Image (cartoon, rainbow, N blue to C red; front, side):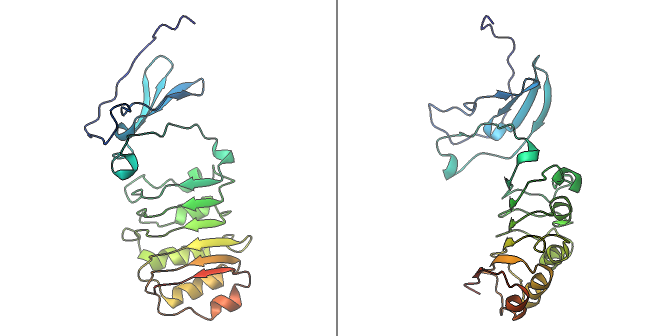
Length: 231
């Protein structure tokens, strides 16, 4: 190859990012799988082009601002094989909009997913229905500070979904974090204990929980960690 530039594309962005003078918003290097070119451009989102420079798709992931990004964007795009993914963090995302929560068929493409982090996310009207249908093999589910306001039935409905999942917490141990789930009650915990007998860790701090039900100790013989402070 001669090193000659073949094409150049730009992506508009109206957000004025916090950054360092030597670290512009477009500093993350693009990557390719030989079929397309992918770039993560901070507040401008993630974009993909074919090898001739034609845009294939663009995703707006929201603004990149705040103390974490005081020196600018530093995370580049990564090509991931969903078949080997064991951990996924989509914390802080608003999953309540139409199409924002992936359907069960998409979750099924993550057969080895064991740890799911939804910290401070806003769940959709169907709660965790699609997640649990597509990834029954989860061993860690992190729901601390989750917003349940858009869920049909709210927090109790999500608790019922977890308890009713046919494999979750029954076929293998489960660590479940519900910290800061305001409105969690002893009856909800009892339902989780009955539905998830292999519960290994339960984190229910800052939930205004009035009591820990006795069923938790009798039904969940493998329980190793219980964090229930500030209730």
